[in-house]
Length: 367
Image (spheres, helix red, strand yellow):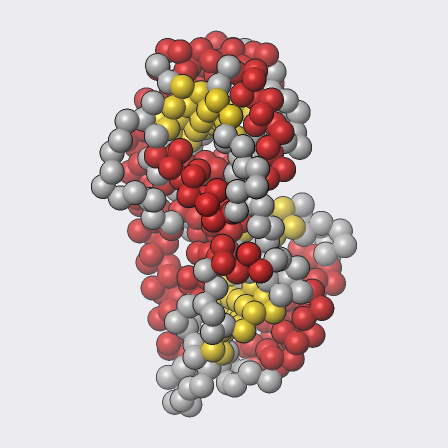
């Protein structure tokens, strides 16, 4: 059995669900996984309470938060969130946000609060849901507190085996972003572009990297385009377009909802997408492009998350390869496009099963 069930009871509704959905509106990947987290929370109770922290009002629209939800939109609202949790009717549901969990030094107090929230919900015979998450920069005591809270949660999911092992977790499932549907089902237009989207905070790729990408595009007859999925990467996208002789799609003053739609349209026309951002590659793969991480000193984040969906060897360290080796790597990704599409479909199905089991757990706790 994937999840433990809560304590059965015949007590009727009303019920209340709490869901955390913080994040910057300038990061479409964060919006993607927060939106899916919200979708998991919808329909689980009579009342929905959403905490978005310091995010602007446009973030609510970006995620599709229902108008009848109670939205707590500033860090000053934390006491109200805790009060509503403490005074909630029996059997509340608490849904933490999916994504990366930083456990570096200084996060111990926050993790202690999350542990107390978890204990409170369990004492009220409710259900705690932790959607697929990955751990970053684990340190003590933050890691110890996080592990205790995860063990007390009926549903605690991990998007990679490394994160699960850190807290002795057992339920490794695909990143929640893989649950997203393609933006144009049944549409099979011409894929004639090679798209690049790289982090602006990391070093500019080398001249050999540029040669490899250009050579791949030339060999496959693809146009090169750079796009922006995170606002802070816009300057880097402009630099790469110039270096690669490609077209540059700015974000500029476009609102995030429109920007996301534009990006998804681009991915529908791409054969290959190169990035060192995980959810650039997830979205690209969902929309039928071949994902590849070709970057200097890549972290294990992308490789681990894609390994969970049985897609291995998706990453190459550009500092450890010459232009010829990098081009071979990119060609190898293109050669397995059908396999990648098959695994993406299987990941989506797996997440649908997980969501069904989550909802069954909540229903069983309220009988």
